[in-house]
Structures are given as structure tokens and as C-alpha cells.
Length: 422
Image 1: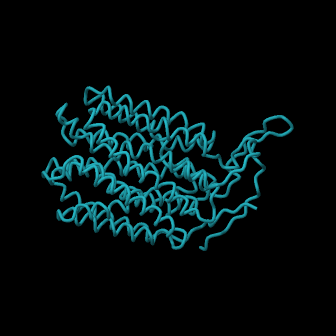
Image 2: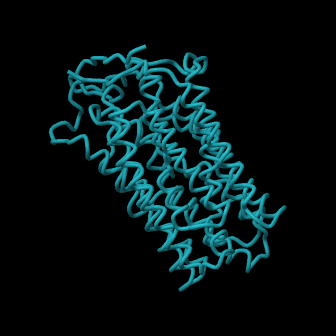
Image 3: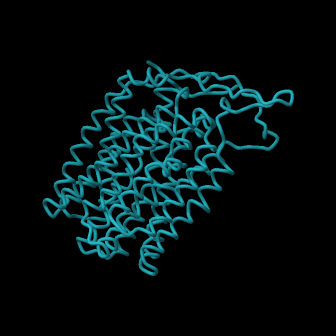
């Protein structure tokens, strides 16, 4: 079925509409918040903390992976409720307190003194980090940027990749110079001083969900059901939802597992911790390029076909890693694909399901992403513990990506086109 362009009535001016506002400021604010948010701090630095934590506490890599996986498992549930809360009460009211709690959570990691405390604090990240997952940012961008939405999402989500280039180098320096406890305290400043102000200053609520003031009295908040799209129940019975969910699960498991163990893998093969951090920063820069490129391609071509090309690129990188060849090139191939699953969800949810229940549907699909993110690092840790090598895991990951290719190829044409206001 061909995509339908839907004309939405122009919303009345917001209470603060006296000031000029450019939709791409939402993109800027989203990029800044994501650059110093949960993904760069949790995903890209976890490998750097493995060696000092192993040295001090004697934990093995499976035990260290338990913390990373606990974040994903808790997020599977909490992200749905966060999406529901955003649909009901608005984006900023939900995101801002969670960012403050996330910064506190990072600071508390400096007090860690047992494996139980390590896993517990990481499990708390499964709740506090949800304010810095892409759901609220993608919802705001989807509401304001229409013609070049794929590029806008790619630019915003490249903030995560930019953070991946910066935050690991910062964390590695702090660990080497001041120890892992002070490194966690320093990392806690990033969401508090950059992400939170970016959300408060730049992010905007979708116009259909704003409260209005008429005749000096506050009117009821308009329901988001006025926006076009499916309800959650309607989305759950579509083939598109389940094809997307399975593809996202598989890709997330591959990418999260590979990145979580990238530093230990490189160190095992002769890299110093500093050199491994540099490679990881290069992965982050490759991800910036990949996300902007994918966003541009989404606007020009059918997004599932673009997905297949990126998945095949990642398979090439995994093949090189499995054969212990050209680690830098291999990691760049992975980096170009890194975060692609997030971009794909943000772009395809409004295309296949509309904006009516964006937060809830996105939250469910993000749960599939979290489930994959929980399985991947544990699978990598188990492979290393059993066989003393990551080779079997890399080969298995390549096969999983081939299945993901089959899933996205099966997606139909977009039911929803560009949402325009007049």
C-alpha cells in the first residue's frame, strides 16, 4: 500500500509562542543531550572499567557482564512506562527528573564495594537511564521535522556517536590519572551539566499535546489520540511490528555484545588500554558518519533496503574480527552500523504506526532492543569463559544479522507518509 500524506490542522500557538522557534533546534538539543547521556556513559565506557574492577575485586567477565545486561533487562519494562508517561504528561516533565537521577546513579558507582552493589546500581540504570534513551527525542523530532525527518533523526542520534568518540577518551584519562572511582564522579557531571540543560532549553512538546490558555483559564490537555496512527493493540497484531521487533532484538544483541567486549578483545590482542580507547573513539566517529548517511538514505530510499546494506557491512566487520584481521577496519565497519537499530526504530515507527501512540509503541520496540542488549554482552562473556576466545561469538553474530536481513526484507510499504501541517 502506498504511503499516505496526512494533512493535520495547524495547532494554535503555544503559550510561549511569542518567541521565534526553528524546528531544528529540537535536533540540536537532542544531539547534545544524547552525546553526554546514557549510551556513551554506560555502553562505551563499560569495557574500560572491566580491567580495574577485575584487578580490585577479582570478578570475571561474565560477572562484569551481569551489570551491563541488568540495565537492558530492567529497561525492557521501564521504557514502556516512560513512553506511556510521555504520551500522558509530556516529554520534559518525564525526562528532566530522570536525567537528574541518572547523574546521581553514575556518581553512586564511585561508592561500589561488592558485586551485589555493582549489579544493583547497574539495575537502577535500567530505570534512571530511560530519560536519556531516544524515545522522547524522536517523538519531539517527529512532531516538528517533517520533510527531512530521516536526516534530522540521523543528526540527533549522531550525538550518541559523537559522545562515543569523546566520553571513552575522557573516562580512560580519568581512570589512568585518578582511578576508577573518581572517573565515575567525573562522568556524572556530563549529564548534569550538558544533557539536562539541553533538554530544558531546546526540547519541545508535540503541538497536539500542549496545554492551552483560553480566556485566562487553562484548558484541558488535548489527547494525542487526535494524531493519526494505530493504537498499541492495533500495532501488536500487525506483521510489521513483529518483523521489526525480531530484527531489532538480533541487531541490538550483536552490536551491544561486540561493543561491550571491544576493549577486552583488543587488549587480549596486544593493544594497550589507551590504544583500545582510541579505537573505540574511532568507532564513535564512524557511527556519526553512519548515522548521518543512513538518515539521508532513509529520506531517499526504502528504509528496510538501506538496513540490509548496513547489516551486511557489519557482517564484514565481524568476519574480520573472527579471523583476527585488521581490527581497526573491522571496528570501523561495526561502528558505521552502530546505533543503526535506534535510527531505524525512530524512523519506521511513525511510518508504520503513525504518531497516535508513538511513545508506547516505540517503548515496546525499544524493549526488544533492550532484550538484545542484555543477551549480547552475556553471550560474549560466556563465549570467552567457555572457549577462551570470542571467535565463536563473532561467527554466531554474523548469522544473526543474516536473519535480521530476512526480517526487514519482509516489511511492507509504509502505511503512513509525511505528516504535514497547514
